[in-house]
Image (tube, rainbow, N blue to C red; front, side, top):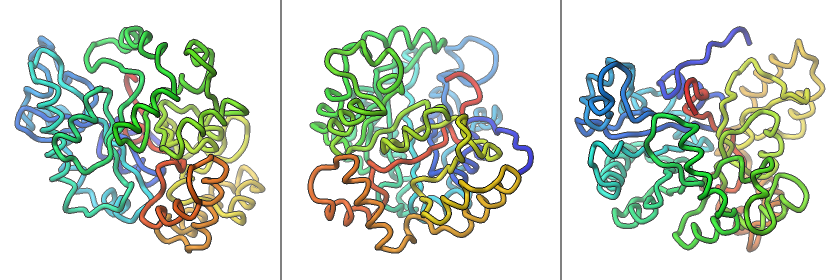
Length: 370
């Protein structure tokens, strides 16, 4: 597949790559000083000078564009991106970033404003069901969605990491008490009461020793821990970050929409030597292609994968019987409640939230910070 140079995070190039290569993308959204939606992660625009003067929410669009910050309208003008999104099976996770406290912009006011602007921007696309979701660390995301009549599904990200601060490690330290007193079972119960169909959670809830500091029995990616994870979710989607290659198979098996920094198209195998297929949700492998890719030698695997990409149908074009078998298997194995027929009918309108996806973090992976 040749050399690949990772594009800058949240750039149009990165988002186009992630959308076409994987099952979709995640990107960060803010409202700038002119009221435009801009795609940018950090609180402050690039440059020098006092940070208070570089808050994105206080700066004009043209200044931000000159600093390399794209607008949402720039992205929606990219037909490769929007055509892939509209075709069905691809998922875009839009994370709302809150303004720095120095802007003195109220959280509810800001969330309701950005929700209205986003909904108006996406309405002309007539996107398929379950192709877009909004996530945010703010505990007020659900309340804001209800008060504004927001029609796009929302996710609260856990644990609660504050929206401001220059140092990521410090943010993580501050979030530790919230992480320690929250469990996946408790989170899912709470978010279901708010009407949310998915949860957003750090990988630490599922992997490594930190998951044992919670009260009660831990969830995990294997054995009894995985069963407890399925029982807690009850068919809910799970968006998990960040997702290293070594855990990718286990995360996909757990029905997770994993937010990945590994979107390099030249990486054809995972650390254990097994092939890597980057579209388990939007373009799932059938038995024939899975066998071809698994049996391919290192020199021919790339060509065979390219052939699979061009030959396999996207989710919206999969024959009804095969789609039924995929959903029935997932519903049974992952303990989705109710009849499998209910989930099969739901899948006709779009990929179920509880199905696995590989989503490009900030498009093609983070290139600075976390």
